[in-house]
Image (cartoon, rainbow, N blue to C red):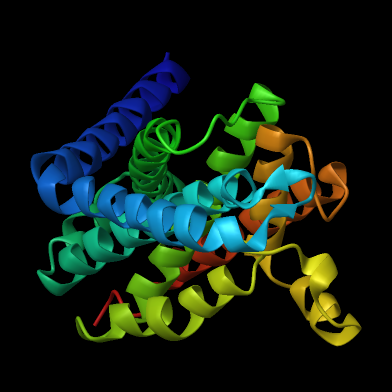
Length: 261
């Protein structure tokens, strides 16, 4: 009976955190869902239609079709990250996170709740971006299961990244440093706009440590059926990043790093 009750209150706690996180970004949907869609549409017009006609084909597909998976993944990554880093840091700044930390809710439930919130926003934006892409290209779906799996793993990885950023941030300016100086370079060097096969050997080797390289290529395989890396290895790397970041995030919560004064 006690085990059932423990499971019940943990589920209620998780459900409460998730609902709060989802309502948070839906309540301000004009700020959270609309801007990414406009940005993606501009990328399609500028890089796909205008520049793409001059580039021609890449990987056996038109340039527009080639960059569609990468642009969708870029939107998923940015929004998963932004949702968690802004939400958790806001609660940390307002000191309301302390109420969760002193409650009987396990740390892994707290972390999971914030991550699911980030995943929901990332997948919502990804779905909208996918619909928008249909107006610019006739991209088909090669493998729906791999596509959904990769989007979920990418959302989890960068939701955890946003959580870690929020834990270490001391002021609001700190939550913009990582997206500007780390996340953006990783995205543009992750094969969103090109095949890494075009890179010199050194930069091709550097790409192997970029998590976004595996996300973009695995997602491109799910949509188009082409990839610069073995799909099994790519998914393994995404799982490795997810488990590693989750373990580190949980350790930070246990220690109360930047949360307890």
